[in-house]
Image 1 (tube, rainbow, N blue to C red):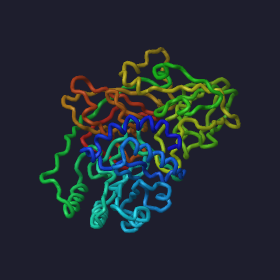
Image 2 (image 1 turned 90 degrees about the horizontal axis):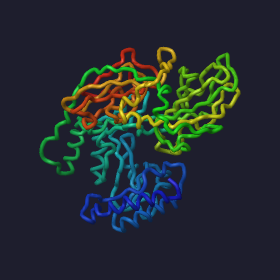
Image 3 (image 1 turned 135 degrees about the vertical axis):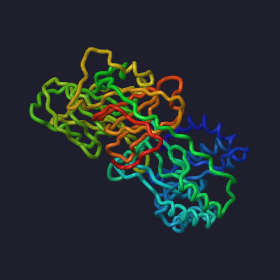
Image 4 (image 1 turned 60 degrees about the horizontal axis):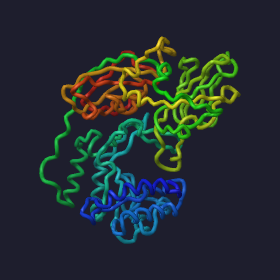
Length: 483
């Protein structure tokens, strides 16, 4: 979001001509195009930005297609999120009042359809909070009320989904709240696409206002519990650094962000040497809350603990002059709503050890996904150095295992006893696990990730503490609950 839309024009000049032939006026399925999403909740109110978007879309799509915006059901949001010539719609859920919400839309659109362009059928989950559930009775009551008014309704979400890899987002109101890998959302169709009781209830409401297709619902996709798979340890992350950083480090007096290093997801390593000895426990501090989002701390390869955005801004360490201080920083997902969307990652401000600001950093971009895609053999520790380890072998380390699937079917992997990390199957990054925080206890594994012609290779990056028994379990159902 910027008044300099050079990159947007370049992208739209490729995308929009492909869309034009699919517009409704040209016999295609696209009946309208959204210009912006909840821009009124953003930190600025730049009408010139909206005008430029409007002009670009009209240039490529023509003057007949309906362009629209979506904003929350409050006047201040619509004030900054709407523009003359673009149809203004609102979004709201079951905690809001239908009549007052549409009255606010009418202040900006005196004529035309009433539109709830995001009717919330559920809600997203945050790590460490209960699985979100929106009562079906509330959904059906409000849907019936909106359809009685002749309103148009788009359900968000109609089908749940998955934030594979590093693609989960985050919110930030009073503190940083990363979203889980699962985006099940308590939606009418589940994360795996299964029909829920909520969908049947919604269908009965719609039946009162519109004809619905005749016949039964399609059956759910088969699920399979592949059972327990044993894992073995490959090695500590720091002992395998040459596999992930073939280009070597960038040197800087002060820390550089992920963005300055042209790395936008995953992990980076910050390394420096202590300038003097600290024989007594001394606080390693992020005085300006500058760890985005989690930092795993080592002294001479020995894991010390972690710093965490908004929560843990200091830990005590000891060390001698010239000891190596390593800090592996995890990007846990970008804030993607509201005023804090300029969410830079990494060490975004200086760290201090006691009263001394730490300087003279080596910064490594870690291409973990590239190495995992190359296979476990790429990751095996082919070196004489022993594994580094803190108490009980804690700290970021890799584990691997495999299993055979004679038939590839959807499944769910549960990492009971493990703490926090990432999991890959056949090189595909399924996403983050964090069962000790919950509510997500399983990760969805779609059938197309699995192989029937070769063993399925699992790679696990455990960031803190492994399970006492190195195994995991595949189930035929999801588990979304607090530990």
